[in-house]
Length: 345
Image (cartoon, rainbow, N blue to C red; front, side, top):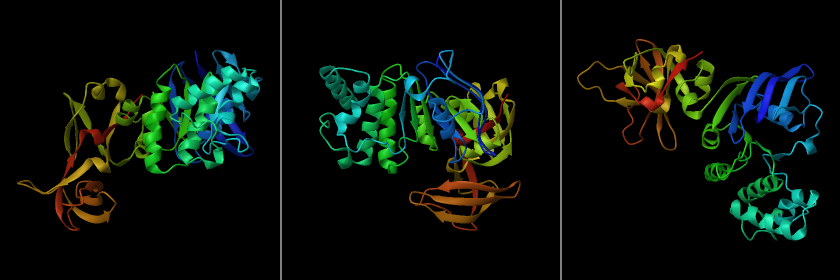
């Protein structure tokens, strides 16, 4: 059955951190809570763990109400942003802490520690002091420590956000592979789109303490429920659109869509255009679509603001080598992967 959250509300004084959330995580599923800082996702996670008390609503695991179940009896494992390792214990001591508290004998405990360290790519690190570890190594140890307790549900609160971008991307792939190796059930908190889409079977977008939409990464990316979700996922321009005979048509042109994109459940209202998927073309035999008004150089691309007479400003991205200049006239070529069909029941 897995995790079920019904009507969950958490207040701190006059502040409502979590607002009437209904959510489920099936056995063997990884669900990511995705949203900006302060949206309530960490509070929701901590309430599931038992570290915060709900003001209203219920948290159930396999049908059992957890309201009266203390943290240490929930059999949930948790990994925090900073790992929170025991500084006075070496790596093996940290990973073996859970089995030791459950009375697992020395030989069996050592074998489990060795197994988990190999699993997270740290074989032979058992005698290392945790204060000598890099940030990525420390997070791997924290993950191994959480797994050592054989948790029924793994809770990860921004587990990679303290790392630099390249390491974060590499560890996200490693973590996704690790979660996919067995029937792991996990709830992951993150503000990073790529991390959520890499790790999760489903993603729940949160804002102001509420869940705005929960769906698979593919459906969420292509079919955000409303403008707010679409904007959070990178859409910068919204245009009236229609879907007919396998194509979506808006003022910037027509792109092919899949059968699901034209499904009646969408209730399509608009097309959201992601700037990185709108590319400028030199006008060729047709009237120019718009005029470049702003040009900002980024590390690997040039960000443009193009004024289109029919509906105003559209953001686009150009390659550094052939980016148009301010006042150049351009057409905008749409990449189908950059179009989100906004709407839904």
